[in-house]
Length: 385
Ligand SMILES: Cc1ncc(COP(=O)(O)O)c(C=O)c1O
Image (cartoon, rainbow, N blue to C red; front, side, top):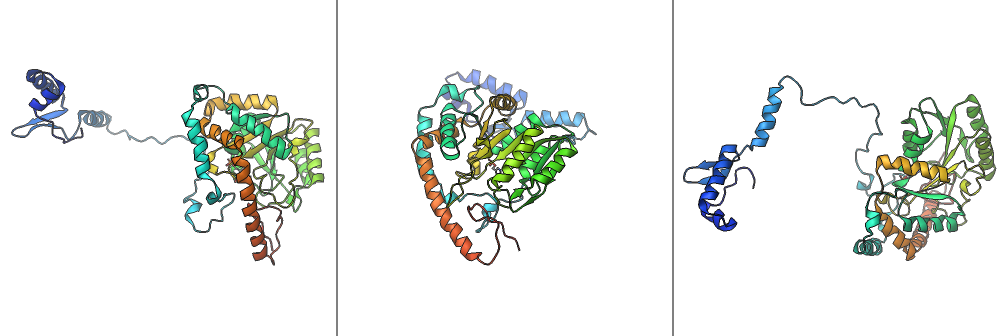
């Protein structure tokens, strides 16, 4: 009942609860004494308008009058500012990295989710196992092997690649370290790195991607502990890091024992020809921490990221994330595994590739007179003039 509500009559309460009227009257008298209800002549009993619990809160605060009820927290860390409005509010949404939700087969995915819910796996719903659901790990092991030639790596499923970027930063960086990043880069990755107290060092880039000569200059200055690359489609310029530069950067990193985060966020969005295989396919020194995401193939809210890493890194990451979130959304992971096993995922990829190719061709037509850096794929187009 809410404050101010009228109680039923003594007679009706005693009939409802099956106690005699004297007992009911005694209980009501006790509630009146405690201040929960009041007895009003010719009206009956009513719930008081200020419940005693609120009164006691007010009294407790007034007893410490003079002390503000709000403290100013001493925030020792901060994140990035939240966007003030969602980009999808606009009819034409030009914000980066947004897949077209109209292309996603929600009904088909709903069936996979519904099957998962009709046969819940208690072991997976409980604590433990923070690397991801075994079914999705199996699917993901097969998929990058087929599509990207990535083999013999441990797979960890993360809450999007952002969680992976954060955990890797926490594991490998500390105040005073430096991280070599592409001069123009992906701001959320930069935030994760600099949150550890590490300094960002922007390495020069041109139409072939990061310049190895400049990277070497920065490495020789000392303290570079991590290199962050988006080799397939540099974010945001879209350029593909050439094979010779990949080799030069890898050689430098191996020589100075610096791990490389390879962020392969949009591997599928490459048309007309096969994309270059990830740097992680040739990684004798186990330097590469390979990240990818389903945010572009499905939608960012799915929060499914992939790490393909060495055994040592997989162990450190899964142990560290126990502190943050214990595990991730197993229902979404199991539904995705089912969707992949049933062939829905590959069908969706074929369909979106076809549609995106048409859109890319149209963009090329419209942008004919404007120089662009890379038109082999489309999640974005980088224009320069
Ligand atoms: C460079 C880069 N990395 C990663 C991501 C995806 O991040 P997440 O998997 O956290 O959604 C994006 C999305 O725009 C991106 O542009």
